[in-house]
Image 1 (tube, one colour):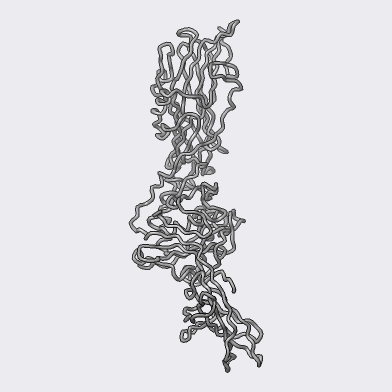
Image 2 (image 1 turned 90 degrees about the vertical axis):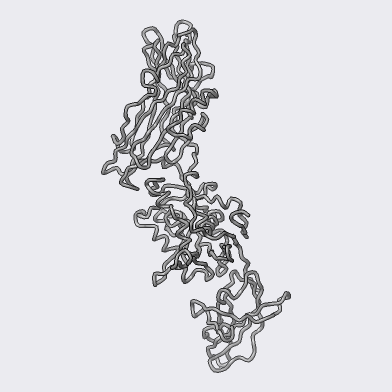
Length: 601
């Protein structure tokens, strides 16, 4: 018995004619009993796209091959819809040379069709489903940035070795400053530090010890505690006082503005003095700078503003038990030029400290944004300038309620195929390709590879998609079958994009993709099935092609261009990376023979 890998098998047999004439073969297909013996003849129906695949005789329910020479093999393809999955059938043939019919039938040959490998049960699409709240999926993640190396020796109890110190003044005094990355901040001070997080509200929920960011916001608490030390050196190198200051940096970008806002919050946590008043009044200044990569002069920092005002907010009197909180606000402005439609901008901060008991100034670097927190400002995605942290990968979520089958198709391809396009857990982000494309290639070029138009410009799915594809005329009167591909055509991950243009998973044709279709199984229930007209999925493919309602295909991506990639939203530029998430499918497994119901019953 032959095992065939589809429900549209090609049946073959050799033609032998005594007169050496050309002849056709007539093919009968029968069901079988449990023991494999023929049971009942099938009345075959339907048409094959290619006449060479054989023509069905509606009157007799058989398939007739084209004429072939004696001694050659005649073959036909059983049209889709006649055979069930995972079922054994038998067939036999009889010849006709144009004048005489063969009176006997050939011996029986048996074959078994492949089983269905995929069945995802889905609800009806909801035409009135609201747009997905994408903001709730843009969660903050940790960021790495350029930091000065920590002092080689810096003890938590006040040792001064390894601190960066000023020169001595005329009295032999000097100011030393350094930081204790990850130092514990007392709960009371941490509470006050969080209360001051007004530039980036979620910063209030982040503990000291790390840096976090989203596409437009950053909360930097990776410098721990800033330590100001005033030391009077005599013969005994006496240390006169130490101030411990907890601090946090916040950065706020705007996708519709060229202004970058940043803010430092300072909260004293402890003072240690050799005698009351030894430290005198201590004060700090923030010295911030910016650099636009490859375009000197394109960014400018405005004057720092203290709250409370300078001379009050940035001055503390330890002997009086002064533990007030203070903030210094800063702004950086980018100026685009005719030659600079986008720039990467790095901010740098240095904290200067002084005491009224010394004329010298101590300095401590708070690091820079170089790394994940480098800012990109552009007038590429829009003539209105805007800025983002391009290292942050935003998350796109398709509208499951509106287009369940399209979302199921994308989830299947991301989850099951080895390239996992857009998967955060697999570390395989999408790379955005704008509609304007890159040099020599646009998204439509990729679509034309995976979902080519027919000669009459109609959709591939209308002619070659699964005949059981369900359309939605109740939503769109002219709805037709449509070809849906994943990964998206507007990405470098699309299998339609050749490697010579930077394509990550190129194929020659959409025929190489995993093939599925969406159908209404019964009222209120839809299915995403593997297309049994093709070989079963190997899950080694690098793309997916599905036949589904054109309305549903379009609805699944509603909001991507205007509510996600747009300049006013995530401000995606060429090759920017992003994730694609499918929260409704978290309970579905990864078995080769995949069955799942979504939402989870």
